[in-house]
Amino acid sequence: MTSHRRARAVSTATLAASLLAAAAIALTLAGCLETDVPIAPVEQAKVNKAYVGDWQFTDDNGKVTVYRVRNFNDREYYVEVEEPDGAPADAAAAAAGERTVGRFAAFVIPVEGADFAHTREMRDDGELSSRYAIQRVALKDGRLELRQLSESFFKQHDVTTSEKLRRVIEQNLDNAAMYDGSPVLGARLGGL
View 1 (cartoon, one colour):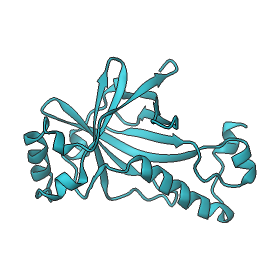
View 2 (tube, helix red, strand yellow):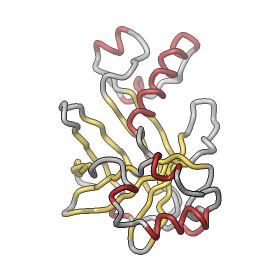
View 3 (cartoon, helix red, strand yellow):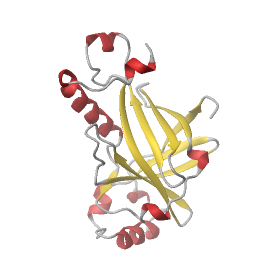
View 4 (spheres, rainbow, N blue to C red):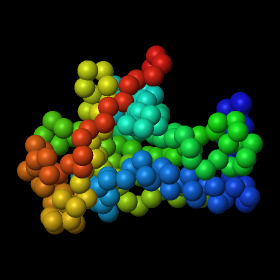
């Protein structure tokens, strides 16, 4: 199947499938802290080109998710998250092995030497989500490490402003309670 066919526009007949696909992508980010405020504004972000590339994550059940990370403007990244077993547009697409793709705008803010990615969904209707999904990111031995932040931990703290959010993170960088589960590691694909 050509990439052109995979990139075709969503028709009215596939609207329901698109909604299910968005739900599948949301599950990828489940456990992420979602906030109305970033740790710092995007103007303070700078792309680390070492994060740019295609990264493959495999869960305990063998399900593979691919993150395609690109430098957008030296401050932000364009990220595609591609998952299997989503809701393909039709039976023919399912038979062809199509995958669900979510698109995100992202930027990274360092806090005391640790990087925190902020992602916002780029919706099919042209709107950008107003909420930020925040997770800790790092490169470990050539692999991309993602660590979810615990939503329940942050509910116990006042994080209604960027300054308050940053302060809570700074004070808890090494506190296991701030994180949701163990980090996951992705392997770089290809030659980027």
